[in-house]
Image 1 (tube, helix red, strand yellow):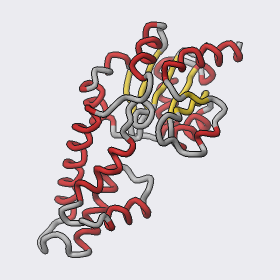
Image 2 (cartoon, helix red, strand yellow):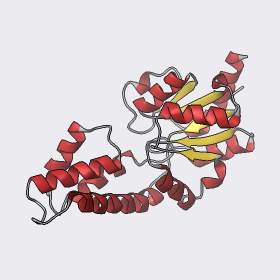
Image 3 (tube, one colour):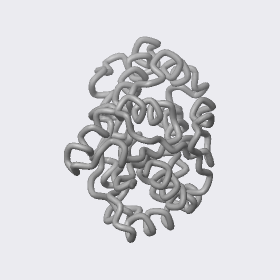
Image 4 (cartoon, one colour):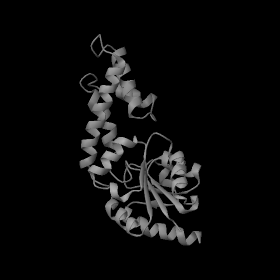
Length: 224
C-alpha cells in the first residue's frame, strides 16, 4: 500500500517553471537588455541553483563592465538573489496551480496518506510560498535544494518509517525521476506542463492530479 506521497513543487503542483526562468532575465534586464548574459549562464550552468546563477550573472556583468566600476561581486550577487526571490514569490503566489492540485492534496490528506514536498527550491522560501498559497497544512514537512532529491527521499523514509515500496515521488523533471530511481521508490510523471521528454516516457503518468489517488490505489493493488 502507498502510504507516503512526495511532490516536486514547480511544474508539478504549480505552473511556475517558466516564471522562474524568465525572472532571471527580468532581474538582469537593466544591464543585460538583450538577455545574452543570462542565456550564457543558463547554457554553462543549467543545473545551478538560484544563488549560483545570480552570482554567475553578477560576475559576468562585472567582467563585461556593464555595472559601475566599483561594483563588488558578493554585493551584486546578494542583490540579484534577493530581487529574484522577491519577484518569484510574488508571481508564484498568484500563478495557476497544475490541474487538480488542490483536489488531489485534499483527497490524499483525507485518506491519511503522508504528504511531503521535495523541491529544487531552497526550503525557506518554499515554506513561505506554501503558506501564502495556504497549502502548508497538507504537508508533514518540506524538503528543498539543500540536499539532492534522492537524499531528501531517504530522509523522509527515515523520519516516517515508511518502506521505499510504500512511497511515490511525483515530479515533472529528470532530477525527480532519477531521484526516485536512485532511492528505489515509485515515480509518477506529471505531464500537464513542460515536463522533460525523458520523463514523459515513464510508465506511470498523470496529466490531472485529480487522477493521482486512483493511480496510487492501482499501484497498491499491483504490489499486493
